[in-house]
Image 1 (cartoon, rainbow, N blue to C red):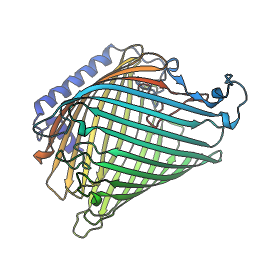
Image 2 (cartoon, rainbow, N blue to C red):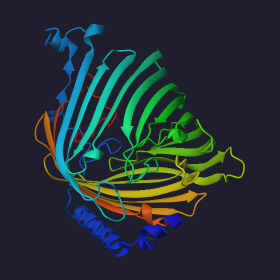
Image 3 (cartoon, rainbow, N blue to C red):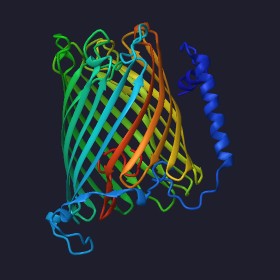
Image 4 (cartoon, rainbow, N blue to C red):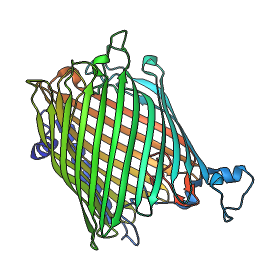
Length: 462
């Protein structure tokens, strides 16, 4: 972490260091000013209610219930299991401009583009047990770079079985098709067509408690990622199967702090021997804090070790850190920060793995009722193993979000990403400006707000 902080402040490896430092100071100055002019918090549950995610029930729409489809408009009457289903929908459409679509260091090619993001969720509302279906699509269409057009699709079916009042079993299956992000480790490079990945997931979990102030939870997930050919070039060397085992032992107290014990195990197996199989062991202590109506925190800290099967391939041992902080200094302002350190399998030929670390700071300010401005700055550092390469990535973003009514919202974004690297071919700058309009029937049911699309239960701005 000291190395991460030093890089963030000094940015010595990054060619835009002067711009980075000025932007960081400008952000912090604005943050302090907003804290001074805000009003005191009157009543706010910080653990779930930042300015951006605070429930606004008059601006959240009910899902389309099967009960209403059957002609029963009275929500207060007795319900039958077949009636207790809700259909939630959302469609975002927008247009914008990207300055460097292929994320190249030279000969940048910009393009205007349009985006459409439909969502559909069918969720049960039974007193016991549950079953939910979620379908998502994300499509981008570029005017002058049509080869970059994409259509990511995914469908997930999951359920919950209530064994007893304090014992629950969960399961889920998912299938999806996605396009690798340009500049990521999965990308074949700007001279190749986009990389398409087919993904299949099956998982199960079990939770017992809290009983006697102890909660035990465990989960297992199997993920299969299949890489399609790129310009006729086989990418089977990246096709892999990943199996993850995780658990949590939570110790609840009467005070504001709850402690967690969080072990984890991850197996990664490749179809071909070009990349090395690996096992990752995680051991961490976690915490959840909700000390007042102002602050909340959660996270874990420990150690992560990744052991590669191939002889001569160096293992990786690293600090393991995940931290989320929320502070509401006033009724109109929320400050959010996240930090992480972890080991990753690069899933590419540039190396066998890397240590990734990052931190971000964000401020949300409600200028008028249901009009929220968000500003943020983030830094990430990737230290690759097996090759001489270190990446430093800086991101800055400003967004304005407005709830126009129960079913409509509008949002504008301006963001800039700048990556410097020891490998000059991996450096790039990219600026995006985007405006989108959304229509929704989401996410209220008879039981209250629900996380219909798995993208945050209370973030009304999506």
